[in-house]
Amino acid sequence: MSLGFNSQSSLSTVLGIVVVIVAIVGTQFLDWEWGSGQLVPTVIAVVLVGGGALLVLRDRLA
Image 1 (cartoon, one colour):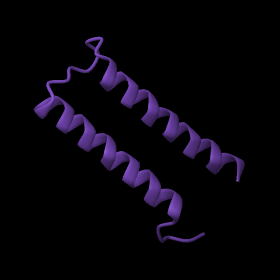
Image 2: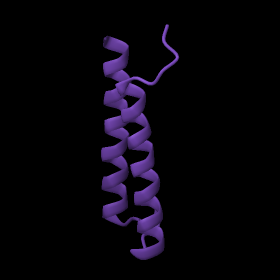
Image 3: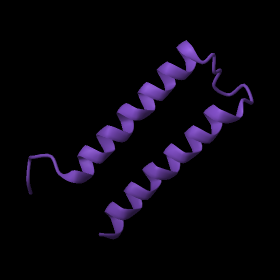
């Protein structure tokens, strides 16, 4: 068992950072309100959740 980072953990970290940046930029500069029925934040959230689910499935099946 290795204590170093692998590509899976690096990819997950990048995905998490992207989510944080999108949330901050969207709420502070684009006037997005999460859960208000606006389409763009919802689509971004669905795509990112789907990407995260694919990462987990790929890890489980490998």
